[in-house]
Length: 156
Image: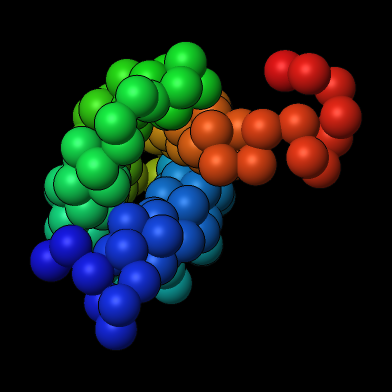
């Protein structure tokens, strides 16, 4: 899938990933900290993580197709392509976080069992923050590759 209705698929798909990945990460962090939130949202988070993981290779593949059409890619585009290769890692981390949360939910882990509860909370926090930072860096490099300094005028 290289184009959708004549538009590059990457341009359309990337918006789903850029919204779903941080949203999933934030919800995972909330589920990791709060058992009440986890009991309500754990399965939604699992679905969001799975959808993000499914969309990621489609988006990166469409991005590679778009990249290959450039005769001489800019340094900004090269940076974006390199960073974009990491998105599958971040999406996989979100799935791992969702699996950990689902297991914690099924086992009934609560703050009363402080060790396991803290382990889940810290693990999900780390996975979520790393994923959010990764998406921001990938998205920023993509925006700079497309828009350059047109919007900011800062030269970088």
